[in-house]
Image (cartoon, rainbow, N blue to C red; front, side):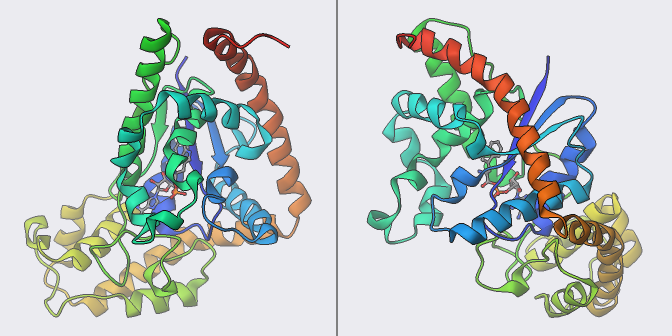
Length: 332
Ligand code: TYM
């Protein structure tokens, strides 16, 4: 059976990139697959997290998914640290993956920055944990934004090397699912940089917790160029900020970029930004309201995650047992 696994780090606010690149797609896939969606708190601590804030962010991210329409009964929604298979399999994969493979990971280079010696070992081994997340459930499909493509290729390499090393046909090759008009949403301050939780500038991203005023202000301040919008998609070339805003509009309205430009080509950015604000508020506003409602009752969110953790463990524990047999660990 086809099984989906995907995750989000509860290390900051969910933003429009997470929504358009990942969470909205998850909502559209549920029903056709068995879906397991995870708040990856163990990934989050690869960089320092204040414990109380991490707890709160984990609830917030869960509330964001629920508010966006993820059904926790049809699917499994939980936080990673509840299920021990993630850490156990990550260790096995630390011994399968090669240092050379991890050295090629561009996200580590970006996140570690210049001071690589001072990055945590966890940040370096992060892609092995991510492979474990997926393969602990033998997931076959992984819906993500474009920035996770390289990590998924590594997960496929690890699955294959494990199968080869141990002479088994155990792990599937998980398929990335990267789709929609906004697989890579860019910063509102710099159209060449990805919209990210870790950007220092709040004006770089629309958070799922932003109200209508904040959304309006951020789009108003968003960087643009002096030209009016082009009439065709080719005209967006070399204009990263324009391309980004048009892409966001297209994704939010479920249209193609060409359709958006057929409507707005030749118009000024100030007109377009107003329309974009209205659209974003109409899509994000109800989600934002529902998130607030859910967060007013944290015990309810916690109970959903606990039940999700129990169900996730039911799937992962027997798979982990088989892995231990394959590797040659004696049963206790
Ligand atoms: P994270 O928390 O950075 O992002 C969560 C999801 O949002 C997508 N995304 C974006 N999509 C479009 N434009 C953007 N600017 C943008 N920023 C983020 C990401 O591609 C992702 O789908 N390593 C992962 C979490 C993870 C995971 C996993 C994912 C851990 N284990 C197993 C899939 C399967 C991460 O840091 O995502």
